[in-house]
Image (cartoon, rainbow, N blue to C red; front, side, top):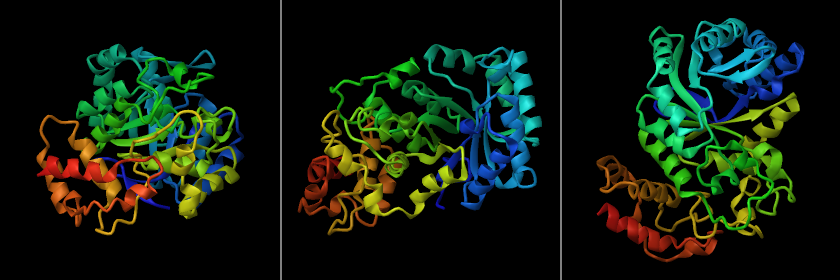
Length: 380
């Protein structure tokens, strides 16, 4: 298992994580079998957004005796009322639900206290300027949570969170299909039956979000990495081609700032399917060739940091160089930190000899040598 830095939190998380939703309505024995198998495979981060009492109890029982080995991503604002899940900002219910989470998980702290599910800008402003955030700050002050995070599907809201300087982790929905779509406050837009055929590459606001999080040290954990399984089916896929779980995982894990993908499991076999990523070949991970040949929507002309351009005869890490450039052009003037990173690279855009060998290997037809020249001028 590979472990990655979770932004500036100081935590190292397994790049394959555990999303708890599929553990609902499972027996205590089944939940323990899945969690024990995750631990055996090196998974050390789990997300519990669910407010349903029994699944919380079962997860708590499964990690009893090994709590310190787990990084728990627990949600604040997900409540259980009258036998059903309710997302709320009503503080009496919010506080009771968080105390319930601690009790049923048999712990006195949550590593990542996630402000639960904000997709509207107006709601983000209300939360960050009201009693909700004051409660979250109080939890952190007394050690009931160690870091403040937030979950959202809207890149515009995620950007606002990253810019606060207070939110250290964002649970965000990332997959090749969602990445084509512009920011929206309506989650149902991401699950529309038809995406059309007018999308081309990563929506600018999503690319900007990933770069901003990388720059600010805001860690990203990923939800909906498989788009609900839609990407596994050629007919349902908005690309007109099917991807594998390993390809979807590789796509998410090649986004800037991404530390871990929260995958849902019902059985130990499901865990094995995801952890197979760690031993998969380059060919098995290759999402780029599949997307480049897709008959519908296209990533043509855009670098996805897939690495097909390697090897460079001058030794340039082209995906990293492109990430630095994409970060830099977000600013009116290039930050000194990016200039320093550029100079510290053993080979950077200054080393490019414009042989264009990389371009013959790029599935998306990116004019890499031209981009290196632009980077050379930008960082001069």
